[in-house]
Image: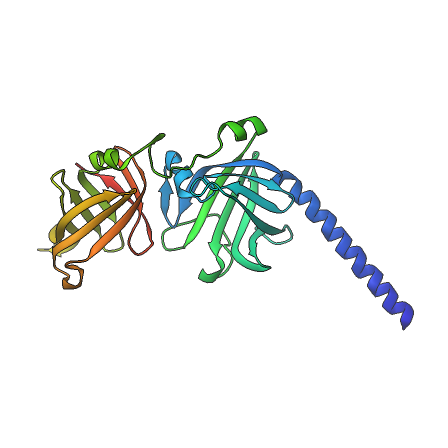
Length: 279
């Protein structure tokens, strides 16, 4: 009986050692500096020039063993995250840990030298089973390419978070770029926010309805008020609305990136959004 127990313990130690060696071999391709070149979050395709502002790592980080380190472009401080992989499952698993607790669940694969990762918050449900981040999935899909040490040093992220393309924008420059009509699509239809240079704004809801046996777009005014920009945040003060609870309330939108055609923001409920300019 004692001999049998010893044999079992030896076999268990051998299996553990083989698994550790397998994980070490699987971790080898991860080592080095990486840059996110494609990003989709919950159905939103993030433009390449906005990725740096979208991710807390600035879209660039270094992997050493099973730790991920980066310098935040927002606070200038270095941060580290520990991850673990499971190459035995399909698709292969990768989880980010926080005090030994799985905080982010994901899957990964290597594709022609690039690293493809799909992640979801552990609080939102199970580990992803496919490499997609369609709307409503609450998942993030990233494609990363490996960088040389020289490129990583040359492309170190800077601290100011707001850009228009590759240029850092001041509140004054942002104020000049915002006027126009911006369309945001949601589950109901489209909401068009018109921002005017005179400091006023208004929204119109566009919904497709069946009228006289054919579908037509119905445009309904929703809210209006005044706006200001301060520290990269667009604040909309509502002075009149179809929704009485919004009147005399300010709705802040943190602008993450803006170009001639796209506006990426975090709204007053903490949701990420993207609007396209229509006028």
